[in-house]
Image 1 (cartoon, rainbow, N blue to C red):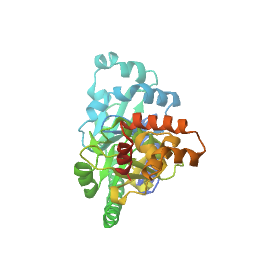
Image 2 (cartoon, rainbow, N blue to C red; image 1 turned 120 degrees about the vertical axis):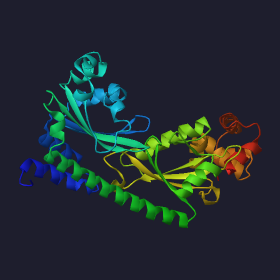
Image 3 (cartoon, rainbow, N blue to C red; image 1 turned 30 degrees about the horizontal axis):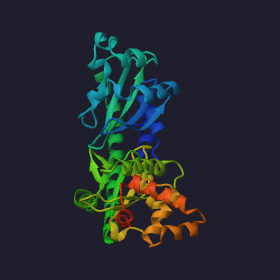
Image 4 (cartoon, rainbow, N blue to C red; image 1 turned 180 degrees about the horizontal axis):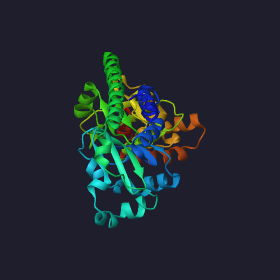
Length: 363
């Protein structure tokens, strides 16, 4: 069977899925040649249905843009894929009759518009945090689809695909276990999250901190803080840390009435921890005794302050008077008083001592 050149090319691409940067375009092209399709995609979405990554082979760029902007949540494969075990093939021609499809907006307005009369989707991952599948698009429905998908050639390909991804997951799990041990030796915890803050992996120590001690929480699968300004700062930091070429980024999450502040440091996760090109961040989590010394830039992120307001807050913590700070910054006392008023408003405080206490809660 390996003398079959089409199968051999497809398997060669699959075997390289254990590489740091997996060659999904080669896998998609190989699947099209082996199974039959004019184009193919590999898409991963999070638990909320938001797209994490998309690899496309021979897909019209306009079709890709329209799908991302308008049709991700309307994909007719998605309801059938929910709960489908990895290794399952889904076929639109099998699930929907002509009447169903003609009245479906996704089929009529998207699939037909881009020449996709049939989609064959192979389920690759269906976990609590993300799911993904490889989908082939055809302009003409394949005859005897199920027997074709169950053929020895196709099963050889899908078995190799599952085996390669299992080896990739095994490496990631081993790496994370080693990293957890290293972090815990320093009294720290770690998380693996995507660019929206959806938690992909949480160490046992991190789970304990987020459940009982830190004001930061995991809510509906995502990092969450009870303060709106803190949530905004977290979202902005996640986006910044996920951007191409970004450096490691720090953020302080303020305390609330019942829980402690915590410090976070975000850095890009190594490629082997990803399945495709989805942005993943490794997060170091530490409580106050491990947080870096008071820093104006970190206070900006924690409370949504301007640089000048953060400097005023640091000065108050250090015991300076407003007059002393104005002289040190070469600005008028009225300017500093205006900045103090803004601090009071943003941090919800009535007295300077309350400002100092809040700043120290994240120091």
